[in-house]
Length: 398
Ligand code: PLP
Image (cartoon, rainbow, N blue to C red; front, side, top):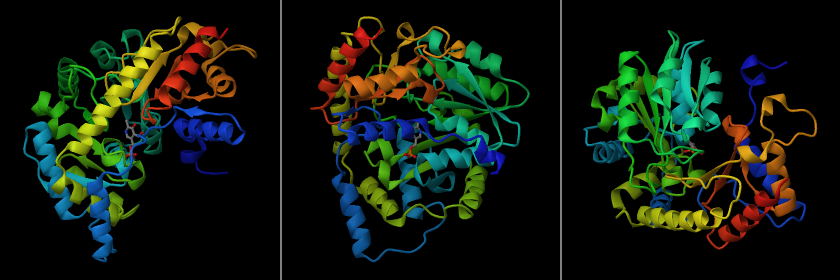
């Protein structure tokens, strides 16, 4: 018998979807894999050069637990430019990906039983980490409002036990980008009800609409003392495997994160840290701009193909690199009342792989029995084919 902490844990739904795609491909099906939470592009030259230089210099030891000082200083400068406020290295911790930054935040903020409000559909790891930390995830459904949380709904979910609200914009999986008015309202609510904001902006560089990305601390500076900003190089530089992320928050929170991290992973990989530092010191922004352009063009191509969907709405996909489909019209109306033989979204996703060779992630991985996520971060020559097959299959599914 294992501890309750892990007994109730299910593995990541997105990782399971990736495995299903691989299994189908191993079985000989020509799969177009739209499950990935990453971009296909190769390495930024600045990252490559920084990593090789660090190896050539023989850099191979532990660093300070929360990152080398130069990198924390460079990240503070980056955040200063992005938010229009001054940040110092004492407010930054470098982590092993954004995932560890979020985990650290949950561990230093939550006492057993503390509630954390998470708008749904949500990235699958948010509630899992809250639970591991002993907290209770409280989901607020955004489906009825086009995947934009309504401030009344968030406010109604606040109780005496609420400790934090997760704000993820641009959002994974829905692609929603929160506008300044909503962020202001969320900030005001946090101040009024004495809550923390966990602000995950991992997709901030990929915006495809006029709304623009707004750091919540810029919209409402008073919320900064109760905000943890989380970001990473993973999505922004197509660098998921290098595992470099960071968080920013008040000094005392960063000190607690440092103590925690000193007993878990210690410092993030030293070569990856130096590569990130070299990038920040030398980038002219062209790699990032190229990625944004590439994704915007993939999105446009994708939206054109998805306009052929006859029974489900074309996704808005304002930010990030996902299309999120609302497949409610195709599946059984009350998934919680399913009987054997009923058609739910998991079945739809399975049949889509087996019969059309297109791998996607079921909304059930994101707390939504009516959703399906498609990544368009794949090589552009495969995307139209995959989406064509998907549209044909979904239009005919009965
Ligand atoms: N936050 C969100 C919203 C994500 O989608 C992801 C990855 O999919 C992460 C955090 C984790 O990023 P990293 O790979 O840097 O740990």
